[in-house]
Image 1 (cartoon, rainbow, N blue to C red):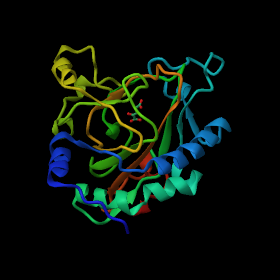
Image 2 (cartoon, protein in one colour):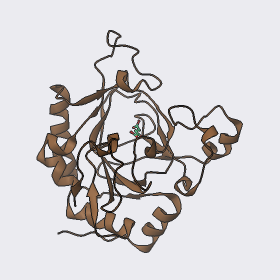
Image 3 (cartoon, rainbow, N blue to C red):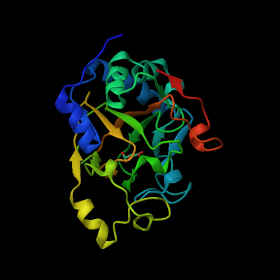
Image 4 (cartoon, helix red, strand yellow):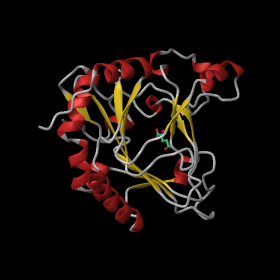
Length: 255
Ligand SMILES: O=C(O)CCC(=O)C(=O)O
């Protein structure tokens, strides 16, 4: 297995901030290959796809007969879509970094959420409000790590991620969230937290590793080009999904 070792600063950054960016982690050729397959699947509207109308985030088309209703947000089930995605998600380079971040060698790749290609399209892509990915997950422990690979440059203009460093370590009262578990941006008590947010611009091939408790958000794509990002989520093999939840719908893959 090809291994990559983080240095002490990168490890300390992840522990303190809940995320770390590894620059030029994937080669340009690798990104081109992954993006070409993603582009083909998007052009063919190859199911399963989550559409912007399914999530109804701010800026999404309102209904299936509205303009832009065919705007894809995520090409789902990336691992079973094509071997290039599965190879990336289970590659020695990625897994060796995850083993360091979890301080555990026995890990698994979830097939239930994320496991997708984000397709942030011009025109009708929506913004994502402040949230922790645990809003999607039901596991014994809220200790999962997502791996976000930029297949092209990600900027403020095309809706790159924003994060609030250190929030993976905080306990936030439930009253500060809305019913859909987004942090309420209208509450004065949430303002100091939101003011600490940082943009995470990425170059093609950069990888963002982030904890499932880290608050993050993203804008919409105001450019003319679709932004493709590949996202997978991992957990320790001893951290089990709760039965009969969405997190338990498909078996995880040992990596
Ligand atoms: O690119 C975006 O809009 C952010 C997506 C995101 O945060 C998520 O799916 O959890």
